[in-house]
Length: 148
Image 1 (cartoon, rainbow, N blue to C red):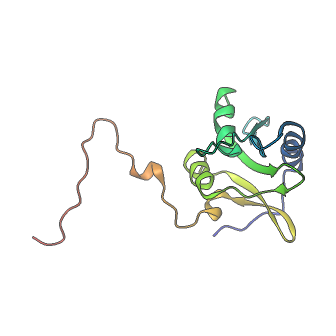
Image 2 (image 1 turned 90 degrees about the horizontal axis):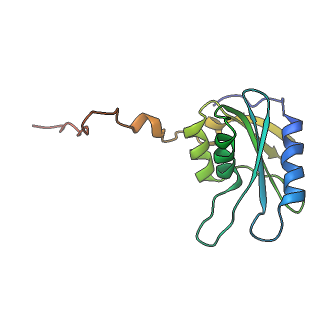
């Protein structure tokens, strides 16, 4: 397990909090996320709640960032509306964030304040999607029987 850092991107937290306070209205949008791209810019998004399981703010953020040409997110944070503060990503988001950005850092809240942790710390012993993808043109691999 990696060591969390005391370095917290406060500008990123403020950006997500601002979006949560000004853009999250009603039950459809209750969470905001912000990420810092490799070039320094900040990308923001909100969730799209729906009873069928709409995407979390972090998942919307991945698409929003790609639409803006930001494919190298370095740090992410999610903030709840109604002054709920920093909220850690759900399990699904942890897995997707790890798959897209294995070196990503995530800002989380603790009883002692905010800290920044590697996404790998949020999902230890994780399934790594890329490790199980077949290269183009290769056939499926079948397990080798243990006994003849």
